Length: 322
Length: 298
Image (cartoon, rainbow over all chains, first blue to last red; front, side, top):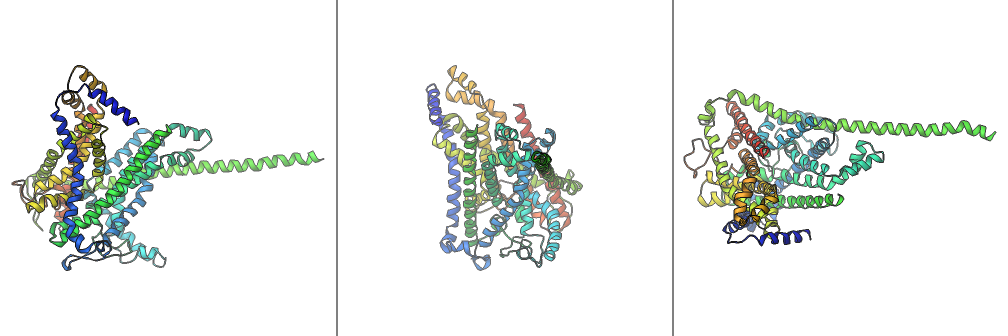
């Protein structure tokens, strides 16, 4: 309805705009090209992966072996690796990111300090992925090795934990990659959650305080629940980022196609697989990698669409509260 | 008698609940305080990795940083000395190619979306696609460029790398340009139409000049993003040991150099990777800061 009236208003102004407008056509072409780009990406990758799709079909998704020189292409270890690394990263990044978002939207400390922290988190987003990888090799891998060799002994007789932290403990492992990934998605979670928290009307907080709530009763009972859809959107969009993150993972995860339950063992992700093998791939391997790329596109598109829709719903809802 | 018994009991009764209430409020404020401390601690915890990264990049990158790294070629395996001049040139060149390819499409689309037909189906599609494109993994841009350019021309090239980066930064440029146009006061447009200007005149001479600083911010952010990316380049531009001769050949870039050198067993190469990281971080930071400065001027 609002759009319609605005459209009429726009039409009203349009009546003044006369003359043949080549520029308009140019802009239209650019817009159409932008939309077509996404379609082109999907069509081109599908086209290139067609031989692999025809040969292995859905079996590609469930094959647990990737041996290019014997022509065996199964992407299951990488699908699982992508999912597990992203979820572990979320597990670490969500509480931390939410805490920072709350910290930034509350007045625990004076504004300059909060701005400094906000700047710091934004800096995290600006550091190139490959530098995270280099730093991970120098710092996180040794730390995980120390933790790992302790963990395999300490958790030896505890069920579940002894499968998650099974020996031998490697440095290039799922755990290392997930930890660095958590750091890389932290800015996304913080920024979107903070926007959602700041958008909660002050009257709700005042109401909670008037009923005698303490600061944290107001935060956890009123403000966070009101901002929840925004926080959910932040989580989903961060998940999308985590699934597509490539370089740092390729440098840290060990790039193994062996399926294992241990977080201390090397693993692989779809993006890491592409980064490692595309340069030297030939024939069926190229096609299979394209198939893997297609799966990655499908997964990230779905996740991002979900995130966008939740975000839109959030904006509408917040507008409703006001 | 009965009242005599009741009287001493009553305060006891009251006292019990009072104490309980007091204890509960003490507990509540304790929880409140603990959570506040926890929250602030976690926020400061985020500083540690960033400081660690900056500290290490400076500590390991500074020793080799001198003028010759910008003028010499990368050292061969096991060799000492050399630099990454060709990688700096390659990075700048491919970011340039990406800008030349993506900026017209980004800005013209933004103009269509915000000036010509803001409520049209195409405009909504453009906005939605731009959002989705921001979410596409950067390596997919590389895969796409590989399929479109490397496979058809038969070789790795700076063109392919620049094209991959262009796809990557297109949504950034488009969305920031749209925000820049939204920021232009409606009164300017109305005044322009009121003076009898055509659509094109209004956009070209009134709206665009006013939106330009904010658009530059978006372009600088795109530069920062493209310069730091590795994934779109590793199998499109690949790498080269030599100075670039033409856009049609494999081209070195800082980020791919860091990636290649990070996994070799030679300490000198690894140190050179840190120096390249330092240069790359400085480059990206300059782009980011200049984006902020351009924006503040407006």
